[in-house]
Length: 145
Image 1 (cartoon, rainbow, N blue to C red):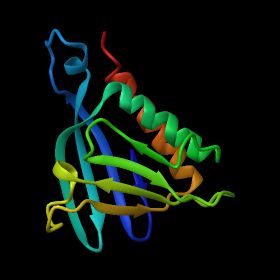
Image 2 (cartoon, one colour; image 1 turned 180 degrees about the horizontal axis):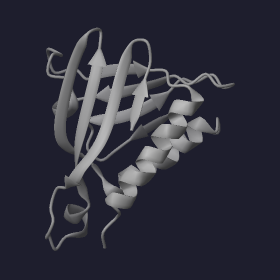
Image 3 (tube, one colour; image 1 turned 45 degrees about the vertical axis):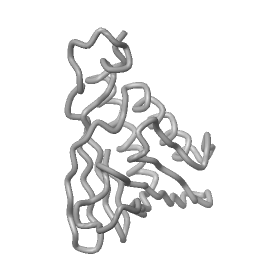
Image 4 (cartoon, rainbow, N blue to C red; image 1 turned 135 degrees about the vertical axis):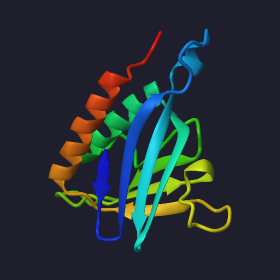
């Protein structure tokens, strides 16, 4: 999934399941995620287990609701607090998202321990591509029983 804007670029890609043979449901469903950020001529790629399979489903549904201008919630958080999404979209095709990157998701060039907030302003077409990409990633890494 890739989201862009004049100030920043954010890309999220699922690489693999974190645990392949755990007997525990929750462990079997953690994902290793690649997070790429670009902000003011600075690039960073981080890899961390910051999402589960069911949270990937939540993200997909949330992005769909933002694209349809019927957002489920202005903010989406996950069990791992290193990643969250929020919207300040005003409707009528104006999509303004803010991605919070903390702990092991924060860009390496960000100093201190405070979270970094990356603004992105995708258009409707880009949100649709992000939805399609998330659908494909979820097909490759479904929730495992």
